[in-house]
Amino acid sequence: MIPVTLLTGFLGSGKTTVLNHLLKELPLTAVVMNEFGEVGLDHQLLEVTRGPLALLSGGCVCCQIQGALAPTLKNLWMARDKGDLPPYERLIIETTGIADPAPILATLTGDRWLAARHTLDGIVTTVDAMFGPGQLDEHPEARRQVAVADRLLLTKTDLATPEAVALANRRLAELNPAAPVLTVLQGEVAPDDILGAAAAAQASPRRWLAANRYRPARLLGNAPVPDHADGIRAFSLSFDEPLDWQGVAAALEMLVAFRARHLLRMKAILNLAGEDRPTVLHGVQHVMYPPTQLPAWPDADRSSRFVFIVSDLDEAFVAKLLVDFTQAARQGHLSSPSVA
Image 1 (tube, rainbow, N blue to C red):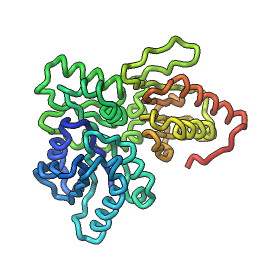
Image 2: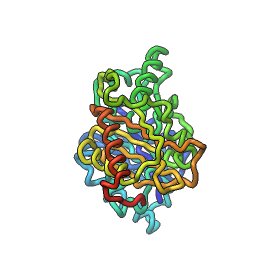
Image 3: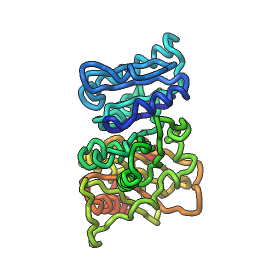
Image 4: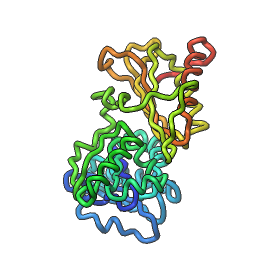
């Protein structure tokens, strides 16, 4: 399985500079770059790469040329398998600054051939300390890139005022409370700090979930919580009693079917009825990854916890959906899909 890192971030936030540094530290890395426009330029800025580089130009990888991504990845893998390319050990996809990452993830998980040979390692988003807060206020693409990230890289802090850096950190904490924020100067970041995000749930599930950083969901009948101007909310839900898997699966299926665009990120550690090990879930918009079971509970806490980052979606609706479906499942009113 080839681990895939999605490197995203708004226009001018320093993605290529970060990529240059990573390629110096990580031999045998394949790169797929996407550029917006008829003439590709960013690949000429790369100083060194010891792996293959595929340039996708002429549009955004998430829309106009989405169909070209799958064959590009297949061609790279087959050339590697035949020995026509170096035996690269990982893949980095750098998106344009206006890309929504979710369709790229759907390509990686929805194509069976790709999914059998590639695994998502994580989403890394760069944010400009000087202009980032303004971009987050003005551009929904920038907000969505931050909301779905596993790691956030705050760039150009040496050029920004302390007040601007503090504001950027506050905005990132509002949009994505759990993602670690790393300060990056001149693109220099330790690869180990941003790679391996997918393994975090296995190594330290409570830290991966970071539910304590999320505000508990506003339930029906409680005092309303003011929205941020951008409509993005981050909240948590907790259930003390074991949950029936069929209720959880049905609720999430309903969310994905009718509210996928608004469901930016979801993570959960579940105590499922009839299971003695915890189950981990995570998803980005309409892409829900298969549930996985951890070897054991990390501590004595057996509560089920969800964290959500949503856009223009009432958290009370999400909470009620999970409560209603899990209660219906407990009462035997739903069929039982498999956990596996």
